[in-house]
Length: 327
Image (cartoon, rainbow, N blue to C red):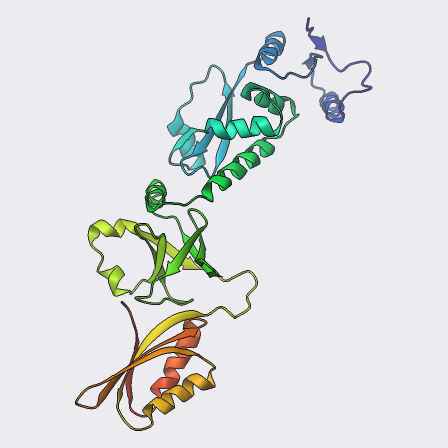
């Protein structure tokens, strides 16, 4: 039978170092205390017996997560306190909370060889298991699930729950397109209608079945979206790669309006050659009035390089104006 004893034990040989340090601290501060010596408490029944002997308040444990399952919370409250979700949500700034899925809890129990969840909580209580170990295991399992295909419905649901303020950060190229970070790690693509490059103001659009497409904010297709489609827009911004090599290039397109003359195309090509910019396609139309419209597609590093190129092209004799394709 458990007995309530006053103060530190006469002999601390074989005690855990943290237990001895606790006694030292309480004695140094002059705080009186009672203790109970017992075997490791691996079940809630044993914990309740200890609490009863100590005349302590039983702690109630709730394991919660947000809707996106990107954050997990272990809530510990007195057993007499009623839990109100809205109160906790306001404190931790999470719009919606729910109980963590049993499958995550089972993974934790299997990982640390516990037969039930009460035993996990009891181990956290007496220090045999750290809260961080449990949370990290939960996040590992959640990340494994996210490797599965994410539908546009999932993305829209997540956007709605976060007030449509979830950022998408466009980074470097990958085999599958453009890697972005935001709601989840997603492979998205740059829209060909406006061909954004680093430095442009951009916005994401959640397509139906094809993930997220990145547009310039001045893209005609974005500006002319019907009201019911605008809920699919998501904030986006550029992020430079951690190791900036300057080798990443992005396809873009411009229109050159000029008076047609002999040598015009040679002069334009020379500007690209001097800057070592590869032209991937060119289309020329000439009106009866001798006005040429030259549509050029090429790869470039970003908006700064594009602006310098456009300034140089404008200096060519006969060039009237240059504009970027915007949808």
